[in-house]
Image (cartoon, rainbow, N blue to C red; front, side, top):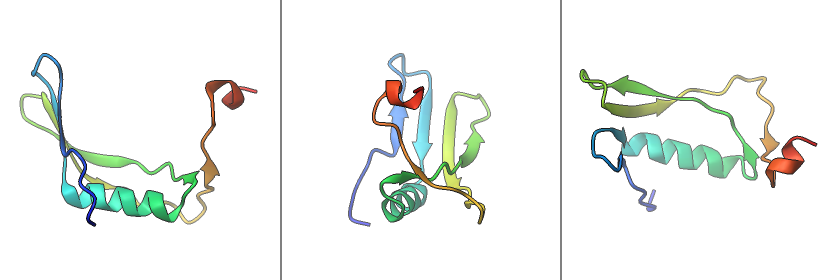
Amino acid sequence: MSRKVPLRWESACAAYRVVIRQRCVDELIETATKHLPDETGSSIYGFYSNDGKTAVVVGMSTMPADSEYSASCESTDSCWA
């Protein structure tokens, strides 16, 4: 994919980080684009560094065949109506 998104996030205090592998970002974008405007509800997975301060996202779970996609709410109020 030609889109580039940040693959690293760091907390303001610089103690915690999240790293997302490019392959995972590409898969997330492809899946979201395929199912627009619906949400997929897929889970991401990965691991933590030994010190617990860095989360590394490496992939996205497959969606069950019986998943139902739906559009996200436009506002909080409409979600609870």
